[in-house]
Amino acid sequence: MHPDTPNHDPDAHDGSHGHPHPDVDAHPSLTPGARAVRIGVGGPVGSGKTALVAAVCRALGDELRLAVVTNDIYTTEDADFLKRHGVLPPARIRAVETGCCPHTAIRDDISANLDAIEDLETALGPLDLVLVESGGDNLTATFSKGLVDHQIFVVDVAGGDKVPRKGGPGVTSADLLVINKTDLAPLVGADLSVMDRDARARRGDLPTVFLSLARDELAAPVTDWIRRVVADHAAADHRDAPAPVRGETR
Image 1 (cartoon, helix red, strand yellow):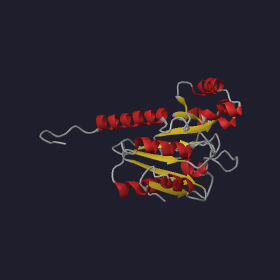
Image 2 (tube, rainbow, N blue to C red):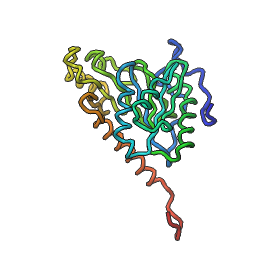
Image 3 (cartoon, rainbow, N blue to C red):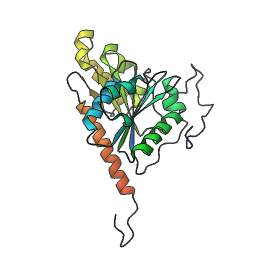
Image 4 (cartoon, helix red, strand yellow):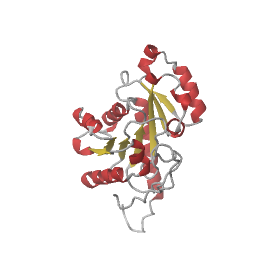
């Protein structure tokens, strides 16, 4: 277990299916400092999370010092997919086999993911961005603030245009909601205007983007959002850095 990981709070459960209540986070928020931005990518099975991570890696891999941690229950399939498609050098990708519900590894006992990030930073040196992909789960999946700074939640139109209306913490609280596979909307009878309306109603001012990786292989609206997040993080680090001592150079 990662030495800085607080002990799990046994009272942080709502008694349903053994999962902690989605609003309960047993870990303190990440502290600011000169470190990589950590962005979680979650969403239901088949929504296109791994394909989105691959697109982001293709778009930003030469621009940022980037690494990825994937989560699968019993396999390393998502990490293997990224390596097989050459989106990053293999040394920049780590796989976590959770052996349990994805909720647990990204929100409850986050030690395996923290260890994977620490291993990457030790092996690679300073990083600008670490993407942490959750194993597929339902609309209640959220990341602990002790693991990531921001979270992206991915749904797709194949589930029907009712998905944003159903809400859930993933839809309502993620820093960015991605409605994916828009090219399939005519084939499944999904109305994108309905999804847009319902996402706005559920999310307020939080941003939502529509995406088709079949038409936009570099996921431009998502990569643009990530660029802004990384730039804001770097600017905050610069503002918080102590002033140099007289005569000292940086």
